[in-house]
Length: 211
Image: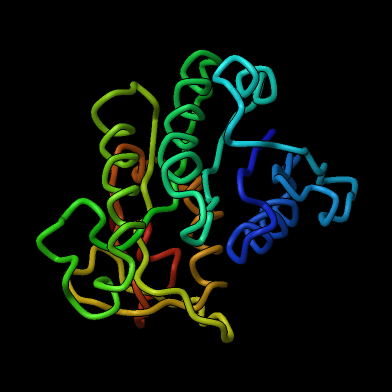
């Protein structure tokens, strides 16, 4: 498949791009810093700006089979990138009839009553941006979406095991988040779902099959 990854130089995006390429997909690795992405037979760096217009974005994603939005401004550009940039990408995807759209979000982003808990209190503005972008994807598009809402991202080895549809606070190895994202394509039962996630003891394949 032809897969467009927005945010391909981020911590999750880099691993996701590698995993998708390893699965045999042709990955268009999109980033403002595309020059940092090594080009391979399966990975093509694409200069990409979330400040661009819907029409400009639509031209870049023409004929794609899947779009991943895993970009994050790390608090520097929440409105124009994390929120409005995400919405423009959705609008462009609809114009281009992209068959599958996968968005990386934040744990409990759709539940403001949870935002004072633990580390979530420190990323309130980020969760506000994700609240509106997730809601737009669910209620204002007809895209075949999946939204993944992991807990806090931590460096460290991936375990290959997770807990999904969690109701408590937790953390995730970045590699496990990337593996879940890449694996979503193999599980059509995840379409139209919001999936919460943190570390756990269930193999990723089993957890996704049970969604």
